[in-house]
Image (cartoon, rainbow, N blue to C red):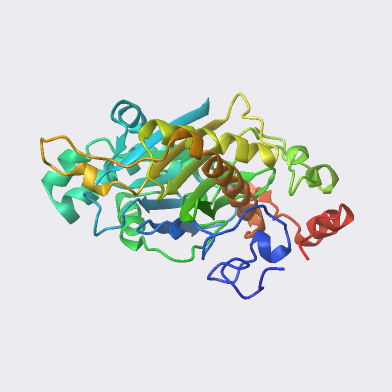
Length: 375
């Protein structure tokens, strides 16, 4: 059983995580069970919660935010990373994706937010780079990555409440270590399997012939119908009481994979593809209206991005060694999604819309009934 006081069991604010509830996830997590277990990766949030009652366009209620991910932190921000992406279902947006697929690299930060603020977030990244680092880095990072999921059931999305200052705040707040989960950052107003969803993360330590590599995943989860929800192989959603929402529920998910394993862009694209298998474990079907978009990057091979015009060397694992990394992506993606549900609370949003938290007691009862609680 996971130590109930550890970062594996609770977030820094004390919110219960899946392992703290006794869910028997596969694999060995990193120190914080977070994407930040990959050395150098930093994450920051801006969470916007304001107002209650009836919707007044432009005035709220506000239930949204911004998540910023810096692949090499602020000190090494100017050094690109090898990267690859995958769209499981394309009813969504991730800017900069075409250049990633063309060049096999990514420059600068990643920002996640709501659908109507994605363009602003993209532009704000460039403004932040200009103000913090100057024009040289901006020219290099001219096609930044911003991605979105839709939070309009709970949030006054037509009010465009995310500002450039909010994106700056998330980028400036980015740090390593243990992370908050649930209704924070870009995940603040999101819904997953008809329960309160949002931001989640997990990691795996992978032994590759005596060399340990880390795989970390961060998700912004906003997808799924209640009856699909499966935890540790148990179809809990079919047995949880309560009326399902009547609006569109096929939603979206953005998943970001980080690793320190030395991989080339085509191999990272293959890692990104495995996020689809991870979300399938909890019941996802990549519905017609869903934007399921995944990105993977490696912090290895920094020396391959020198300014020299001479040939450069890059290390990489042979393809036949990738299976443990594939498995780690699947495991960590599944756990990150479930953590968005566990580390959460009921939220009331616009027009009195209520999205309940996943009931911990009922989930434990159902898992215990199937012999699926960790000892």
